[in-house]
Image (cartoon, rainbow, N blue to C red; front, side):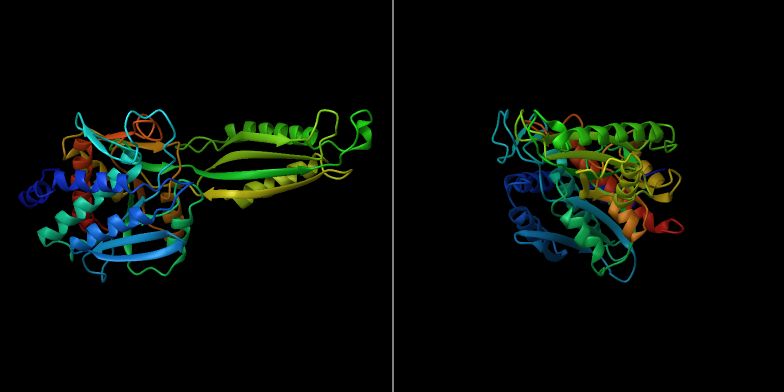
Length: 398
């Protein structure tokens, strides 16, 4: 697609210095999860957007943990929803700089959250500022939902999709790092905790007890058998759902029959699957194996659930996103993700087309010491977001 003269003026108005300044301020505000709150980050974002003339609304989800919503344009017509998060994973060790004192060097911003995903937040804000300055905001409304707790249990996104919406949206772009590749689908995730309770006894007479660790081992074999079935029935685009046993802990001493064992597992979900359904199926398999009774009891809890999503690769949002990136000089295309994100909640609960598109490489740059993102890619992302927002209204059905 040829970039029009008005689109070129819009793109040229995007301020790289503004993006760098906001990204560094957001990094410096911290927000490790777990270990801190997102309050400082939310304050920096809200104050910056108020100064730009955006409509700003905050909703406290938990003490010190506010969701922030910034909007431009009319609330009388559907707009484009951008989704991001204000928390970051703990910094850990191994840094050559202070992880919460952003540094710009060699064309990159270094600091915890630069890639995942405070740079993405700043890019969205810069795109919104450019659209507002251009006078196109009422025709092309935009909202950024900056949500808490994405890196842990999803408190922010759950509160957002459950509340009465103040605006309507035609589609959603999640600004997570994708190296500017348009992600049109990803599997969801469920973290399960399987608690096996047995009966303690002296190891010299193990038949007097009921060994919880032995029962847990049998449950793990059941899970492995379930994986073989999942592998045989993959989604054509997202591949199979998967199990992974993450941790196991049990017993109190070598000479005692273990009366308790806890296994945590990760179950990647295909669109349409739910954690409750997975738990129900696993319980049925455990009962069929006659594992419970005779002193053994099993409880399965859901510690976290994040749904997956799949948007048609031919959907107008997908094609517009790809073209908008290409019109900024990148030959990027589409892909699916092995990770999960808040976009699954939006697609499932709000029923709108969703993609993931943002600056930075999640596998190479995020969640590691000296996390960084290229300044050039932040600017290119902002330009792509501005084009998506101003082009999407012309598409039928969006």
